[in-house]
Image (cartoon, rainbow, N blue to C red; front, top):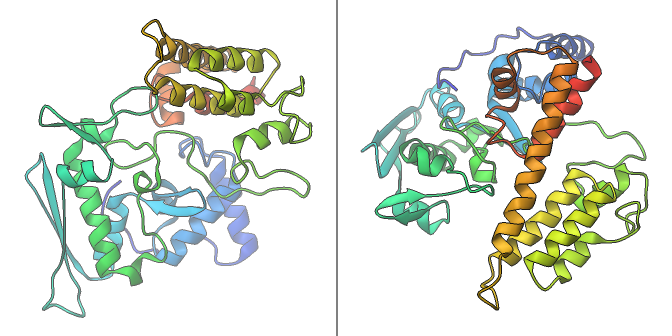
Length: 351
């Protein structure tokens, strides 16, 4: 997002009832990021957090993301907050392999805070690898991440956020990290592109907080079965996957769990175990573990895309590719199966 931030002058209601009503009305807008559409609690949280930072509601909604309970923002927003407070921020880069950010505080003009990030430092932090003198970084689906596609932008973002934490802690109000620093997959602008990003939510009494509870337990709780019985068949498939001797066995366990109606979150946990076992050198040259686990993920992703297409068709939604990209923040090919199914569930009530 832009580094230019308009100082918030109280355009949203100051009292709680007014703020709630404002959030309810704004949540009806389908132009918002998908995590805010029809979710007034999320809108209210972002607006109130933005009020603390002194930025407009729209800047807060488009710029603030909560990941594992921690608020985060793009480097553009963090840099904007620094400049909004009257401090000088300068960024230098060779456009390829290094970036340096400097801050001179308004109340201490004789000292310059400085931070430099280069590809060697990024590799040391396990953000990427260096292959053929170029950054190499892939997501869990084997697709290039922003560190591989846009290294210059990612180096600038790291330099800006680190120097801002060092020089201007007082203007961030807890907004210390970018989504990427908290583990999210991001695009060139540092915005999350997968649905694992957490937003503020309300948990009713007796219900499970799906963001704070391990996925396996969530699968049980949302299916109205006890935690020790993770599928209708009563088998702990995740435990079996961990105990399995190889990825081929995990693939069979995954198929059994899917056949018993296990939820997508639980299936993802099993697939992750399969990937870990596939990464271990096979005991014999005949092993096809990697192919097996990749096939499981590809089949699940294709099924999720089919569900989304069916939901969009039932709701009479047109321009599927662009509409899905706008809602997911990325193409359906790059989105996770969970994100796609979440969007399909949101569309179905409109059918």
